[in-house]
View (cartoon, rainbow over the protein chains, first blue to last red):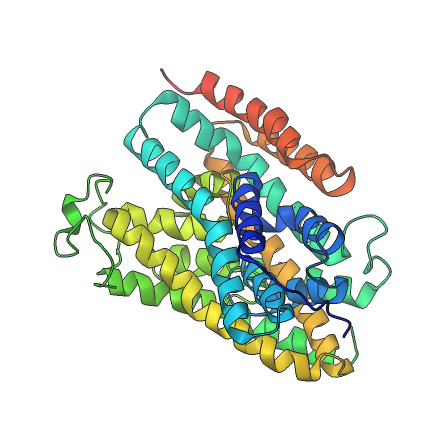
Length: 196
Length: 208
């Protein structure tokens, strides 16, 4: 692993914090939508993480239980580790997670409160009803992009057993009440055996 | 959770200004601890994304909300900035216990998974190059993609009770999928275009 060795001053931590604060407000449709911007900043511009560290952080958070936004914690962890200590790594986790969560959480809370107070308002009802079809399109396209590894020309585009597993999961979970963990275990098993 | 500064006493949740008039026959979380524990357990079952689990648990098992209410909350959660499932957990918490509920649900969905993912990162560093591990992660990612699709398909049932006619709903959803997944139009543009169209259609059909 060719991780960069860093010397961090307080202004570097501050830069990291401010950058995540900004990304928080830009993360429409989820933190994962700002991944490419994070990669540009942390890997290409600042050189705080190696590309391998970045990609591994995203992949690990995806396959670990919990919200996908936890990949941000791993990014902070790795930046901290690159400066050489576990204390710094824990600071990195705190700075990046607070940065990515604080602005969006405060904003969304206020908007949700307002919408709840005015839920009988015609405009609020029209918004909630009117967004429903697009919301479903957003979910299905997220699934598509994850399954193909990034759409047309994605890395899994030719891997049809992987595709079949995604499609089978979608149908089984949609039509039955099977617990989700069974499908995840099956996926892990098929993957470990090299079937998909 | 009692260590948090609580503007709403947990003993009097029904006084929370934001709590909607609860339907008498619908179960609800009993306490802030119940919210915290429920969302911790939900998060721990959500590999590669928590939405599928929230929908299955909150709507179909716990029955805290109906499918229609769920998609309404989700549409706000997904369009606001920030991690969608965290927004959603926060909004569900708010419905029942105000700000304290929001913080409990958010803490529940983040705390234990955060500790876990850091432990995994430590372990992963030792085994990152094992082909079996790489394969298992790839298989789980494929299943996770399927889970998100299944959630979308399950929620689509709510479209039959939407004020917009079903055919128009399907047309908007299909166009949205093509624009987002195949043509890769930026999300903000699609929200402005198709979200705006949906809102106008719904507005015209709702009684003033």
